[in-house]
Amino acid sequence: MAFLCSQSSCSFLGSCFVLLCWVLAQSHIASSAVIMSMRNHNNNHHHRRQPMFQTNQSSCALFAGTWVRDESYPLYQYSDCPAIDAEFNCQMYGRPDTDYLKYRWRPLNCELPRFNGVEFLLKMKGKTVMFVGDSLGRNQWESLICMVSASAPGSQTQMTRGDPISTFKFLDYGVSLSYYRATYLVDIDMFQGKRILKLDEISGNGNAWRNADVLSFNTGHWWSHRGSLQGWDYMESGGKFYQDMDRVAALEKGLRTWAKWVDANIDRTRTKVFFLSISPTHYNQNEWTDDGTMATTMAATSTKNCYGETTPMISGGATYPIGAYPAETRVVDSVIRDMQSPAYLLDITMLSELRKDGHPSIYSGDLSPSQRANPSRSADCSHWCLPGLPDTWNQLFYTALFF
Image 1 (cartoon, rainbow, N blue to C red):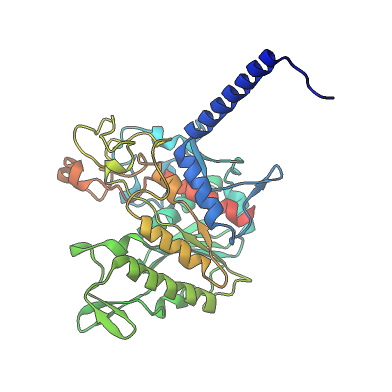
Image 2 (image 1 turned 90 degrees about the vertical axis):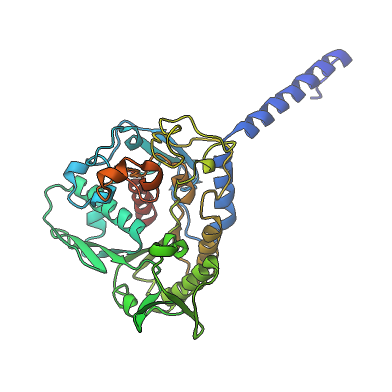
């Protein structure tokens, strides 16, 4: 049946329709730029990876979403976990605020399953999980130990620390959680007293990785270090030695060596392979304010880094990727997509970028009293407090493993 109206009433209805469309459009535009940019990143770059966690018959983009307050968090107390290194133990070393512990990650289209440590142990019975990489991998490893231990407090455990490998065992279940320190993933050898970063080689390190049932790799921060923090004296590539080269190019060479090694040496029918994307830092406050001006936090008058930040960034002018590592992030994504059997990219970069409040700052056992008194120079805005953000990395890791 045709819809009939007078000229005046049709004109009125048409105006209302135009107004409604304008309101909806403005509402859409006003939605979080962060969420939209993460959604676009997810759609553009994850199509070749494993299917996303399914809920209510719709796919869930795990790494696009928002942080919501949840009073049931944290998942454990620092005083109940024996594995937390002093540099991550913010509450023990005097952090006065606790709101940063009360946030849960909510993906766009679903709720994450709550972490269940006993279920983790039962499903991983008799198996080994190994984190391989730099101190961000150690951050995640210790978080997982704490999360599982909180769910199975009566389980017999055993911990051994060493270099390059440390292991925590849940003896009743035969489950081993290990961390292998390999900051660049590729080899570093000594030659005539010099440290040689061998961009084309993975040899001895890889022997320890082959038999794990789950491998989670990471690298990133050490590739940009200079001066006293630089971990090598020369780079070697293609039989030639370099005092230096473009650091992003070096990272790509090293990661492509790692990717070829994984494709050639890891039996993917028995071993699941993950890669933790580059964890952001928060040393420059211009990266998380809308217009580059100082944020109104307790730190605004004393420093421009993460010191004094107590809440996540919920929305603003952010685009993906932001912060200090955009080129490196693109390299990681490109290398993994080019693998014969791509590793599962645990893409925590953007959701972690929002958590400027989650770093140890000056509340780290590694800092002296004089260093704590000078947060503009000494605050750790690279690692993360435990309990804290790495617990969410592990909740996503748990979801990707079992759901």
